[in-house]
Length: 287
Image (cartoon, rainbow, N blue to C red):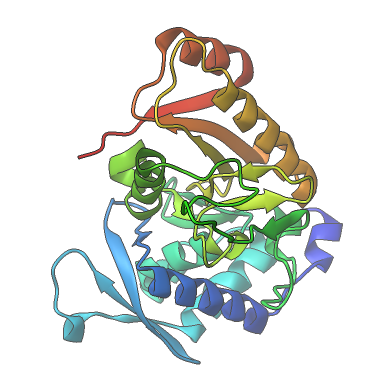
C-alpha cells in the first residue's frame, strides 16, 4: 500500500454503518448475498446495532443460523486497513460469511481464495471513502423519478420497459448465478428504491443494472429483450455507461465491466464487440 493509502483510514464504526445499510436494503428487497467460495445464497433476516442475522439456502433452520457480529466486521476491516489483506489467522476467529458480507458491502474489496481464503484491498480510495447514508453514494448518479401516465409506461423514461425486459432484470438481480453464471451483487444503494433497478447519470443517461463482481469491480448491464444482427444500440449503450460510471466515480476504466443481457444475442455482434471493446454478453433464459 502507498503512504497516501495508509493515511486514508475509515473507522470500523463507519464500515459497520455501511454494512448495516446494505444489509437492510438487501433484506427489504429479499436479495440474496452469495457466499464467496460456493454458490450458496444467504438472505438477511434481521439487522441490529450489533448483529446481522441471516438465513442460508442450505436448509438449516433459523434457530441454527449463526449471526455476523459487529466485532467480526471490525476484525476484518482492521486487517484490511493495516495490511491490505486479511490474515490466514482470522479464518479461525471470524465466520466465513462475514467475508462475503463485507466484500459485498464495501466497494474496492476483492476476494482471493489463494493462497488462502482472504479479502484483498484493490482500491484503497474507494474502500476508505466515508459512508454517509444521507448523501448520494455515487457522484454523478441520481435516482430516476417514477411518473406514469394512463398507459402505465414511464413518462420521459424512454418508453418504459416491457415484460421480457423487466423479467430479465429481475432474474439477474435476484438470481445472478442462474441468470449470468456468476455471483454478482446488486448494488441497491446506487438505485432508486421505487424502481429498484434503473439508475440515471447526471447527463440523463440510464443504465438498467449496476452490480459488483467478486473481484470488487463494478458491472454495468444493459438489458434488451433480444439483440438481432442490426441491434448495435445495446452494445453502444453499455460502452457509454462503462465510461460514464468510471468518470463519475473517479475510478480507473478497468474497474468497471460492461455487459449486455438478452434472451438471445446475435453471434456476429457479440463476437465483434467482445473482441474489440471488451463488452461481455449473456443470454438469459426465461420460463
